[in-house]
Amino acid sequence: MAKNGTEYEPTFTDDDDEESEELQDWNDWDAKEEEEEEGPDFLCFFCDFRYSSCDDFFDHCSSTHHFDFRAIRKALGLNFYGSFKLINFVRSQVVENRCWSCGLTCQSNQDLQNHLHETVNFKDVTPLWDNDEYLKPFLQDDSVLYSFGEDEEGEDDYTAVVDKEELMSDLRHFEEICIDHDIHVEKIAIDFDTSYESGKSNVASSSNGYSNNEDSPGKVTINGMDSGEHVESAGRKTKENKLRAYIPNHGSKDVKNINDDYFGAYSSFGIHREMISDKVRMDAYRQAILKNPSLLKSAVVMDVGCGTGILSLFAAQAGASKVFAVEASEKMAAVATQIAKDNGLLWSNSPGDSTNHGTGVIEVVQGMVEELDKSRLIQPHSVDVLVSEWMGYCLLYETMLSSVLFARDQWLKPGGAILPDTATIFVAGFGKGATSLPFWENVYGFNMSCVGKELFEGASKIPFVDSVDDHGLVTSAAVLQSFDLVTMKPDEVDFTANVELEPNLGGAAGSLTDLKSETTWCFGVVLWFETGFTSRFCKEMPAVLSTSPYTPKTHWLQTILTFKEPIAVTSGKSNIDKSAAVGTEACPAVRIPLRISIARASQHRNIDISLETAGVDAHSRKRNWPVQIFNLG
Image (cartoon, rainbow, N blue to C red; front, side, top):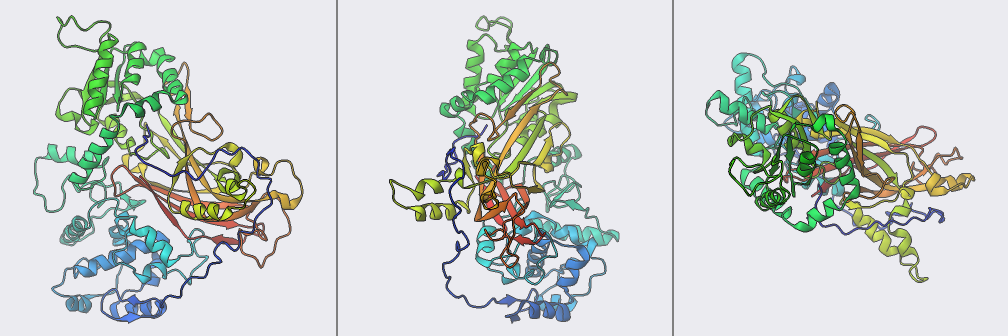
């Protein structure tokens, strides 16, 4: 259901040529000398002291303020992200004159310094900073954030070497994902007060920064209440609590404006023509709906985000007894109503309405699916089949999956069917042939490769949506994440996954057998998805909708994340230079471990993607590259 509202300047082509060109020396990629900068300045968490050494800074915090950062990291096994969150959490508490470990609010900063004490049990306070809000730097240009791990390389397989300019530039854009800082600080105060009045902590452990417990900060409100809110009726609060599990708590005005723009964009007939013209898309849905009569015959169907109503028309054609076509765009709801009427399929509650002909099973409901329960038009748990084409670029862009899960929990009968019922994200590495670099190397006999390199550098800062041919892939494909739409929880839309890519040079190096020819360059990774209409519900004829580079092109294309520098990879066991850095031509990698996180962004309907990349050579030596953060929106 991806739209063209997001503009990209594609850098990538469908060049089918095999990567038979000689390898270029990319080792001088960063050969340009950078201007010297002044040394780092480390500001104490708790007082005004400043230090030029990170070690001196942490020694001071430990000896003077009873905050032993190294001991906390070790005791809790904090990785890069966990440590990053802890630093920002502590700074946010000190600004409020609040003790980071017990939650006591002091009258002044001096009172706070006098109060600070050793922490008895670190695990009791861990959940308070285990929230993706604290991935946003609290203090601008905080030197601690890019220096705390510089002496610990190798402790964490996936901890990247941190570069100041790259990391701070990226993370300024990776703002709080869950809730506003002010609200969260107030919520923490309430948690602490409640915890210590009862003699124990109420804060439940979180997973991946999001809480599965109603009493924890995150995307789910506390017993249905925001901080500072008075207790209201239990019924209303339960409903609000349930709803907020599906929709990140952004500012209401911002969400409304973004939703208005989003649904307004889908009022363009050009977008609907593009989606309806996507043969892969339409064939999969048509097969799943029309070729499984035991599923659709006499069923009550809900179509979430119906657009023109094409899937609702298929459902009516398949013999559904009633189809609720839900559409938030006022214009498209009117269009879907007219289309259903013109085809004699519009439901009418007026028996004497002579304008309604045919079976009349489609009822178009205008509004967001999260707000339909206010109208009481659809009874809870009354739907047999829930169908939706909710997928965006990289599967999760537009975050419409949350709406589908809300509809599932609100209206689907126990044991009811969801179409599609599975979704999987895949990842693979791409080579030079999938970029525009070959084009610029020979323009009517002239070398313009400097243009290609500049485009490559720019591509490493933003994700691109474009088509990648399978011949451009230089590694095996791996499953990044799988979703079961029948059982998954709303907060599982955000995830972190570890995968490992291995060189697959059949397409890139052809049948050449000499060892040098088996080395090529991996320039980044490609993400795509598949959705399944499995035999769990489609018993007569299952179907698969794939956006893979190996299958016919769809309007979703693929999502491309470009490395900051290419990585040399090999499938052979050639002699390597152990003195050379892993990932260079002299010491190519035989494996590329990745850790990729995808989460709903602070900008409603956008997603943030973080990419941690490493290379491992034939002797198991490992090299990490700086983390990259992309925003798809």
